[in-house]
Length: 324
Image (tube, rainbow, N blue to C red; front, side, top):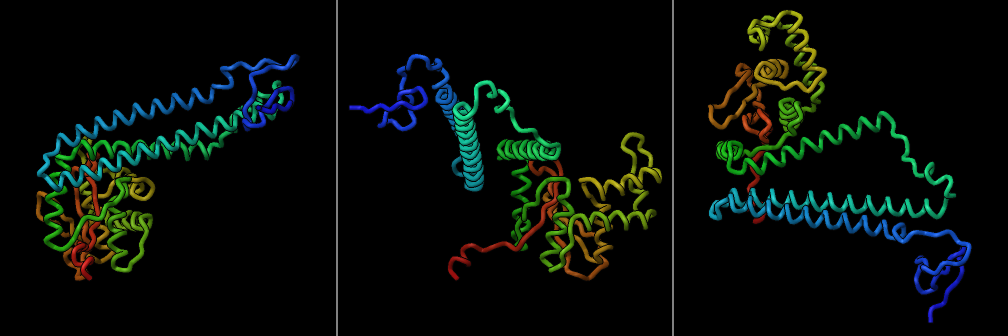
């Protein structure tokens, strides 16, 4: 037989921990049933949404599989990696949403029992967010959006220009016992690739330092660089003011680097820089220097977002490693 005890005007079963009896004691305030089940309804709605998203993802994955021939092992391997990434991202997203909902429900329950009804609205006001926090959240949102665009481009280009370019580059590099080392596509890719290559030579130079030195060198050798810079609107050579703005952007923004900046860096580092391409012969700047060259990979179709530079690493022979 169930034993009941009275707790602050409500009858509570000793066998049911923290569950209120629907039996109302005269004089007690009325609690609507919808209020008691609201949290459960919200969680059920979220679970339904998750099930729908999983079905949509599975349909998308099936479409991706149908688009890749079964006998194309390389593309099937890439497809497997892409599918695993998509499933992992969705699993993490669903986990975070469920945890956030449960945390919110828990906080609401505590508030509803612990505070006076007249102060409930005040207590439930969200904490004030600082300007710094807003900036961090905005930056995180933009980064997430960029990663989502990259993921979409990866799927769309399984058999497109990027895939073809990557295959050609892999063959060229393999012949030299090298492989691509991925560099983030954040506007600093060329400088980050140079930074990575310098680390391999035990030379630690930051991206910020490389940008600053590049701008300083170009400003002190104006005649070597200014003739190659033209205004895209007028077609005229840069003015002195436009050239100064160009150099200032090198230091203070994520402006992409190109052949002019590579030429400046080869002189600064007194090191040749070799740029490997898929459809053209490799280009070497700074051939007059005798040091071991820095090797970069130039991609025209990276991530579907435009031109991009990657670094390289020594090709790892997995079979040899397993036998050693």
